Length: 82
Image (tube, rainbow, N blue to C red; front, side, top):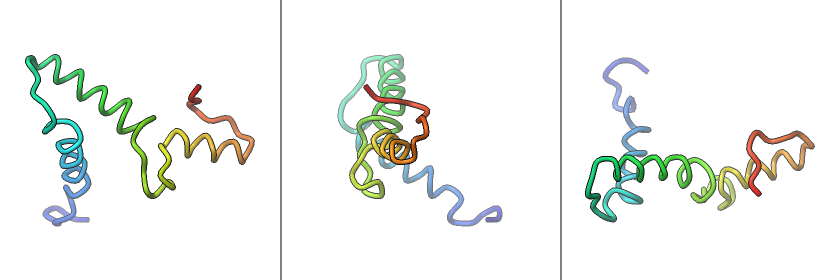
């Protein structure tokens, strides 16, 4: 890619659009701290780890997919879900 390509921001624009639909447009927050905590929780718990299912992973969460992958290879995963 070079400067000015139309694809430069596509990934981030898609992420922000998804976060807007799944989190930001669903309610109003009274304080910035409350919003910051909601965004942190969305990123760390829902989006990155345990709850968000992905069609590319067979409708499994990233953690489920990783654990299944490592269980089949007899290698220890970085994160284990109890």
